[in-house]
Structures are given as C-alpha cells and as structure tokens.
Length: 247
Image (tube, rainbow, N blue to C red; front, side):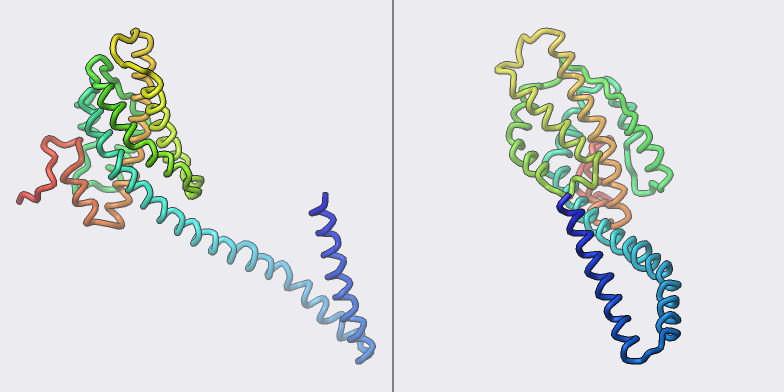
C-alpha cells in the first residue's frame, strides 16, 4: 500500500510539472496552436518510444545479462564435474546392470553432431539406471561424498543457480544421497527395504548427472575445444579412458 501511494505521488508530481511547463510556455508565447501540435506529436511518438525502450532495448539487455549469467554458470558446472561429477559418473557406472546400454548411448566421440547430442540427451533425460545395490560399495561412496559435502553446500549458495533448474536438481539429488548415507551409522547388514531406498536415491542422482553432463559436454564442444578434447579421452563411457594422447 505504501509503495502504491508513493507511485501516485510521483505520478502527480510529474503531471503537475508538465502542466506547469506548458502553462509557462503559453504565458510567454501565447500560442496554444503550437503547444497542441507538439503535444500531439509527442503522444503519437509515445507508442513507438515505448516499443523501442521497453521491448527492444530491454530484451537486448536482458538477453546479454542472461548470457553472462549462463557463462558463469557453465564455469560452476564445469567445476562440479571436475570436483565431484566425473568421479561419480565413472565409479557408479560399474554397478549398473544396464551399463553396456548406457555406455553405448553416451559414448561421445569427436564427430558427434547436434543431432547426436539430441539423441543422447533424450536418452539421458529419460534414463532408467538400474543399480545392483548389493555390489555397490556404499562405504566408499559415503566417504567420498562426505569429503565433498562443504563443496556441494557452497555451490548451492550460488545465486546464479536460479537460472538453471536442472543443475540445481542435480545438486539436491547429490546432497540428498550424501545425507541418506551419512544418516546411517553403518551400511552393513541393513534390510533389503533400506537398500532398495538407497538404490532409488543413487539412480535418481545418476539420471540427473548423465543428462547434465551431456549438456555441459556439448557446450565445451562449441566453445572450448581444448577442454572437449580432454573429456573425449577420459570420459567413462568408452572402452579404455586415458588422458594420454595416443595417435
């Protein structure tokens, strides 16, 4: 209510100032015809001015600002994969019953086109990872995520994440898995129902992880070929990942 009252006061002040200036103009020149000509001229130009300023210029500025935010966000996403995501991609893949299918669909190569990324992205977005929870080394996973907890919480404090819902979902899925594992004093001899619950948490996190990884890799291919080259040699969906350049 207070803000609305301030708006009305400001509007009244500007209208009164305009009327006063027109009155002074009339008192000096006594030419109402000239006043109305320019008044109608200004009113006629007003829609075009609103279009140029409010729609065109504002959209250009908003788009530029959004591009700057997305650029910074891609740096954050890259840091996440370097620090946490790449290890999770490779380590958990060993325990999936459908790992051969996942590797076949996500094995990014140098000659991939936008169409290939689209196909893989559709697969990853609807990925149904099937983890063999009895083979999964939960103690190792718990220890790793525990080491990365403060890093993950720091990422969640980044205000730029509001521009990327899917990456935020990935961070929440990762931190939730960490909390689930940390909440259990022991991960040995736990009931089957609890193992099934943890399997769902792992699969949910990996589903988000795979789709975000693909988006990030496509960004590297178009903007940072030298980083894309390293990913091609080291990603876990190929037969023998190795950072060594072997001709």
